[in-house]
Image: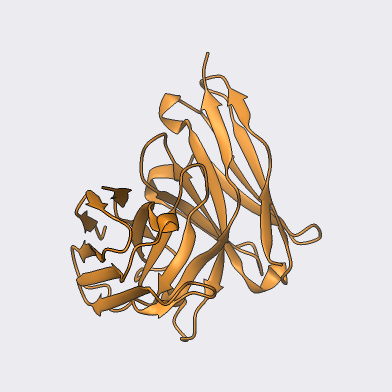
Length: 108
Length: 125
């Protein structure tokens, strides 16, 4: 099974700062990687798919990059509504899917 | 708009079964699959399995094989997930999610969008 390891576990930042989240796969997943945002009490929401494409309605301050085993989600300037937990997900062996353990972006 | 609406919270005894429904609207049900994902309290996301909205084919995560059954009723655009022999480790929020095909030919480009609102399953004696 492919394991996704996210870092850091928690990121403490202030509004307006840049957030950089990492997701590393135990073996290559090509570009078959997505990022989801989850706020307390809510279902996850698709942010980025195919490693670097923003989903419909997602603001341009969110961007994704990477391929193979190393991926990054960047939030260029944090808005108050961006403080949440972020998960990466891979599907190279569809229909199976695995998620990272999550990175919590909290207000400093 | 595209929406998945799940059934309400459940409280079950250890050893019982639970069946969660997921009613789709706003798109052609048979054109997309549905995946089920669960989240234990304070924990991350765990994929449980997938069902085709077209022909009912299924694939389950190895961890749940023999204990889970996923079905779909195309006449009502509703997917179901039944989990048997519940124990305390099964206490979680269960989500359904539509498998949206991104702009590539591979099934590996299918991502979860949107998700249902979640169904809380409590296991307690």
